[in-house]
Image (cartoon, rainbow, N blue to C red; front, side):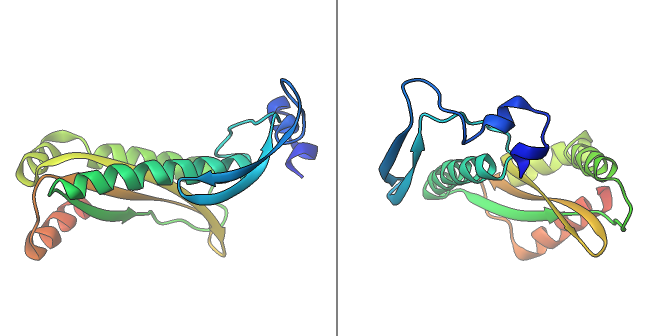
Length: 169
């Protein structure tokens, strides 16, 4: 269906147009899992537009994240999970909601308060995945954030920290 409605040539050709030396069938394993597919076909790589490319990119990124976080945890460090969303209702434009989510995340992660939290908890980085769903209340963009730290955080500290993040949100 995307091929029929898109104006983007690469998306029209994705998974359809041969490139290079021709089309081949590939069977093997990827990251220890059985895999099969076609090679020698155009791909668009549009993670936000193409469902086929999005699935491929998501699997590859998931494997990379699992490996990196696994190394982080094996080194004796910690990871904390946070999901953020915002109020929305049917009729809200996706672009407006997405922009608000992006700006709110930037706000939470900037300023003196967050810099103090970084030092206090040993925050060395984060991995963010933005997800957009659509339902009864319209578009629903939200973000899942994995926060990587060098130290454990007690339950009480975590509750207080999340309360501060929520207030900034």
